[in-house]
Length: 250
Image 1 (cartoon, rainbow, N blue to C red):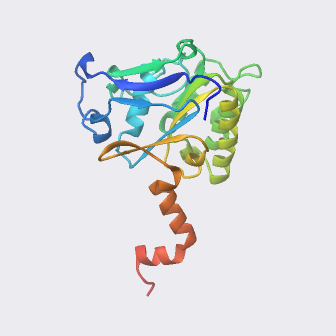
Image 2: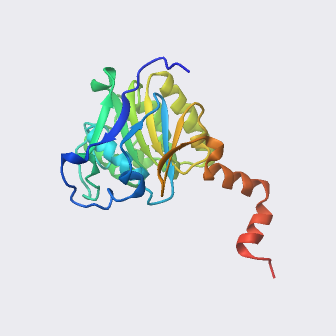
């Protein structure tokens, strides 16, 4: 399949010669320890894996290396509620396409710190009828409503968007709405890299899925993921699986 445009970031490499990290915890994760180069899909790339596998750590490092604030937001955001991010970004080198070297639209979303981003938007006076963030504060909307509003109103296209577990804010129905909004942005030449556990979100077609695990990072097909297989097995036989998990009811 030929892609109609170049991605903003073509690949990610780790250059360990650029100096020591303050903490080697991230570097010693199996998925990170074996990583040399990771090619990114021009449209959508998913990072999946168990908690602690390194997918969010690498996503954060890519974001910081590309000039985003570690807690989220656009490249123009510069605030710090808590300095807790790893310094893996020191090793990250981004293989940008010619169009990716231009500063364009983009957003780094971390579900755990989106509250802080919403507070910064208010602090900067960006809540108004003429603002791309809209006239209603994200704090006055539900988490899911504010996130979908961000997708449909703030993001314009032609940008790199890095999302860490967006499903944390979204019901299953909202996850379907997320897929629609993401597809519209892809058609406007946006690129997404998303760390997720959601079998709904990672079902987006023609995407690449990278699984982070004990053997490093492996490219997998959607129906090969544990997320798909476990969810399908449970929905097909919920009573049987619950009996196996919880034991026979007395």
